[in-house]
Length: 374
Image 1: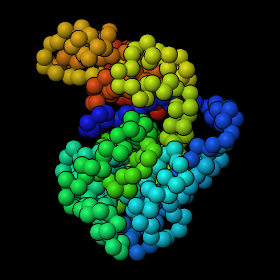
Image 2: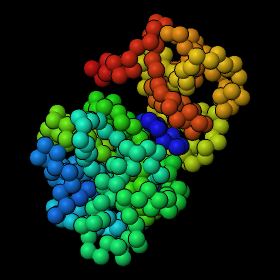
Image 3: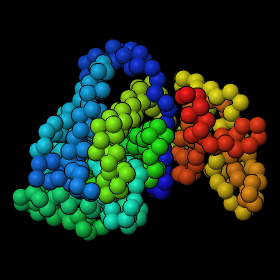
């Protein structure tokens, strides 16, 4: 989970649909506009790993996501395409901008020459690795299928890393919100569908460029992986992916409606403000479980004073398996620990993650969550 700013940025579990309805009733004039973008289409089939068509799968998922979102009060859904047609990359962003959209979500399927598998969600940014650049380059090469692409895209070259530098600045204003949504999507798919977590990342996708709103691109999985490709091509897989993406968007809408906006936008958010957010967050208690946020694991024994941990207070150090591990927070409330995780990631610990203990022994977080679901 390696981004410049945050990695798996997970913020605030969804409140009830009732709270969303109340919020919508308070502001009936402008609906919350979500633009759903099914990648590729028409003569651009996208990748065809194992004989499957990315364009068909992405469209099926998007239509299912949209059908659920359309049930929400005061939410308007716009599709860049609802059938197998070709839409230029720049037109996809233009559709969102003309609609004064509040959110832009682009859905794709991945491919690789190896047996790679898993889900990754991108926000716009400079690529932090060659792998991220290769994913962006592959999606951006759709430009070559358009007529007069050199004029339309102002000399942008999908194969040149330097072409990406200017793209990032326009989206900087929306980066925090984009990472929030991306992480909600990633968290839902990984935790609920048991997909391999390839993390939230930054890369230079043209389809996210010039969208003047929070925007993400979801690579749901690899069609080139035999098992994952078959899953994504199935009605079951598409329905499950759509459900988790849709739920993430619902959570995003709810969180920005009721959470103090400062927590999302201000990287210097204070612990007192985090406590205020926690007070508004619905409880999800797991009796006998202690959730903590692991900040780091190192051979170095550090003093746990706040100055050593970017101002974080009450950091706890333990020694496990020959390493010193540093934790923040201790609660049985899973929603509360997720807010704490978000907070420490904003403070500068992008690799922080949640761990769980029962009777003094570390247990698998996913097994804990699964036990309550059952």
